[in-house]
Length: 143
Image 1 (cartoon, rainbow, N blue to C red):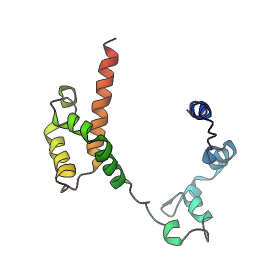
Image 2 (tube, rainbow, N blue to C red):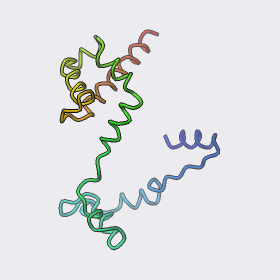
Image 3 (tube, helix red, strand yellow):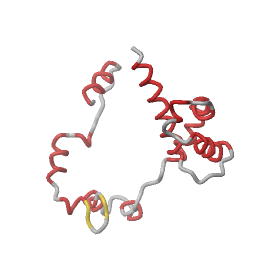
Image 4 (cartoon, rainbow, N blue to C red):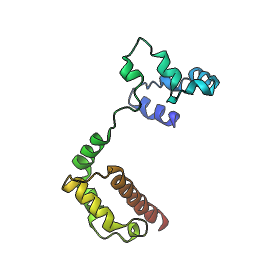
């Protein structure tokens, strides 16, 4: 994958950097004892500990970084609303085999149309991805 990215970026005179994929760093990380990676209930313990005095404690020891769901939702609606409507609100016999379309339409209506539901947008996103994948799969099977 990285070789493909290197070729495509070099075509545009861009030199990509992957600092966390440096071979020496990866080998070092594999050599770190497991109890330093997960300790006292904290994931990435050694990374958190190494940031002592560098970043604020509330960031260093937070349990989870901020969710990007609102950004995904906004961009889904901004750039893909027409596709969402087409996939979810039209009769899709292939997707019907795998997804309860009535439930999906209800979630979609409450989440994106009325903006009242507590549903995760991932439910909608995964259903749409499945629909697109099935559509492409069927096209490729016809050859």
